Length: 350
Ligand code: SF4
Ligand code: SF4
Ligand code: SF4
Image (cartoon, rainbow, N blue to C red; front, top):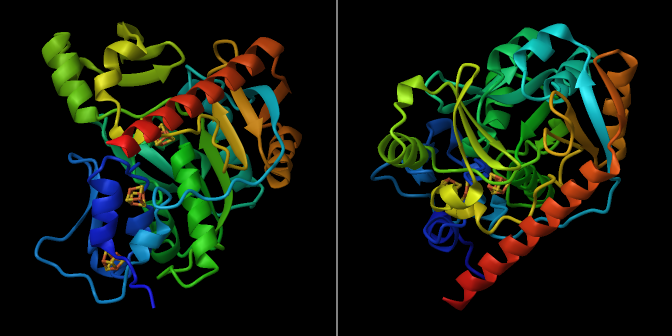
């Protein structure tokens, strides 16, 4: 019988070679989850096991859960694109740069009791992310502004189920986090999952993602040392279709193109092929739509039900995305796929 792989294999094959996305899937499926044995180290940007500990023999749930060990299988689905704006004043005020569709879809799913809680990411106040569970619109608004690309969002599934006792939750996150949950679904049906959380995530809302950056390096090495911007002045870092925008309140302090910040991109993002969140029910972002509006892509029949419910209950208004917006979305998906495949091939040759 083939030997079961474990955390040492995950570390060697995925983490040490820079393929980890920091999705948190391995942490939330660790057999010793209750003991906090496996956790994510934000400053190192990787999962780590508690110092001096040894994994039990024949364990390895973490290894088989990882979407970078084996990518999940893509299902063919819908692809409907809309330009959306929130009809909720409080949400619109909290999401000035986009159309507020992301929070409005989550708020609608909570109000319609499609889910009992939403796994979201808040900014701890120093631009570092914290995974939280929001159970009402006020909590969603309070948590708005967190950086999903650098948060181990799947750890929120364990939190929502074990600590909050929820049966049905919405997972909001990046395409890699949606892929990690897809892997959790697949292994949840088999024997490689210590905790079967695979029936509790009812709705997946993904974010369009062009890449996540190493925050310590971006803030300290690039923005403070190279560009002379004091970190304590910065209130928001936003990645848009033309690169990084840095703000102090309403004032834009800096715009840097992608080439200029390429060195700070996380290694795990350089092999990523998914811009549109293909494993989500619905994806949302502000690329492709006019300022103040959100682009929404519906991928599944269930996603369409949730979207229509949000329209019905007046959380959002929508119209089909125009051709130039749709073309931009498709071009960015193709470019990201090509860049990810090229980098994978380059790493294989090494
Ligand atoms: S799932 Fe098992 S092998 Fe993986 S880190 Fe946890 S205890 Fe170790
Ligand atoms: S990609 Fe996700 S599951 Fe794989 S090692 Fe990194 S955090 Fe763990
Ligand atoms: S670029 Fe890919 S791996 Fe990186 S945060 Fe976005 S979806 Fe995840």
